[in-house]
Length: 304
Ligand SMILES: *[C@@H]1O[C@H](CO)[C@@H](O)[C@H](O)[C@H]1NC(C)=O
Ligand SMILES: *[C@@H]1O[C@H](CO)[C@@H](O)[C@H](O)[C@H]1NC(C)=O
Ligand SMILES: *[C@@H]1O[C@H](CO)[C@@H](O)[C@H](O)[C@H]1NC(C)=O
Ligand SMILES: *[C@@H]1O[C@H](CO)[C@@H](O)[C@H](O)[C@H]1NC(C)=O
Image (cartoon, rainbow, N blue to C red; front, side, top):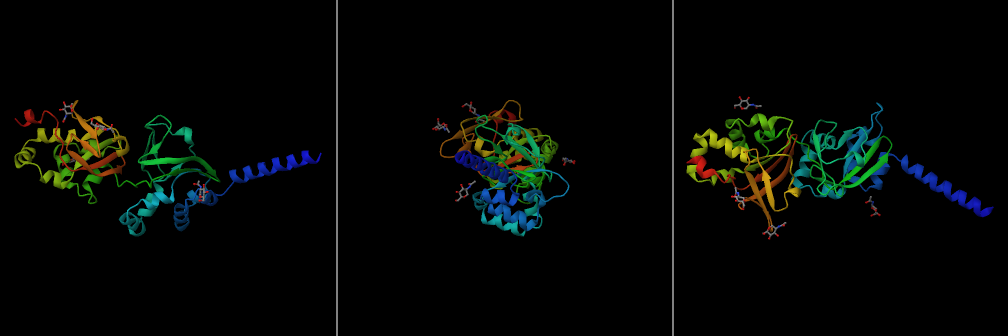
């Protein structure tokens, strides 16, 4: 009789603690996940979508960068988050998805729109073993608390500053030369559509400066050649650097011409171009800045 009672007591204690866990507050859950930076930001912004206190009955899925993820930000990025008006709110908003989503809802290729209108793409390189949301890897799924489901990420997601075209045109990355060429080559519509997604390899200012003057002249006077070169830097699909990290080829929107990718100690495109800045997320894809201009193998015949 006594032992039955003890068993009963243990069972009900276990039951109680399970219930307590299912009903834990979002703040408690974030503490359990050691996401102290994210929790303190949510509290500072008093963001009730995260803290579960919103009164409209809306439920949310929250992507939670770990403290290590915040520590990976550069001092400049950290500083921008603290000082650029609205950036912190926009960045946190890029981690909030309306509705409750669980691990089984994240199929590769799915595009999810965040509460502030940014796009997150789901990518599973080895079937379901690993899942990336843009460039962030999922560390833990399905952590429930009142009103929210938390998903733990190893990287803070960028709040994109617009479409690829808008980011090219903007001042942040110094890509205006390429942006102007995109206009001249009439590819701006492609890179401005929110359909996409596209991956664009954008040569840096120095890469253009280093071209032989004959090629630069040809690009300036021959729109057909310019369009070819621009199209050859555009891949249809969204490729972050983690999935570039293998020997192979990448299709481009210039006919059936591909870019060769080779990986030894670092990643090279067509055996020459290295990556300078990678994974710049935009609302319709991703930009990588490269240190050489790429040319398709028929370039000789194109410029005669
Ligand atoms: C949080 O940190 C504690 C103490 O370091 C550790 O035992 C626990 O596993 C961590 N939890 C998670 C979800 O990483
Ligand atoms: C594309 O560039 C052309 C020529 O500069 C311009 O007339 C057009 O408005 C641009 N389209 C977009 C979507 O920006
Ligand atoms: C790519 O190919 C090179 C040369 O054949 C080889 O040395 C390298 O290990 C390969 N890299 C990967 C990631 O397979
Ligand atoms: C890519 O590699 C293939 C096979 O080695 C080669 O034929 C082709 O010319 C390369 N393309 C470019 C643009 O370098």
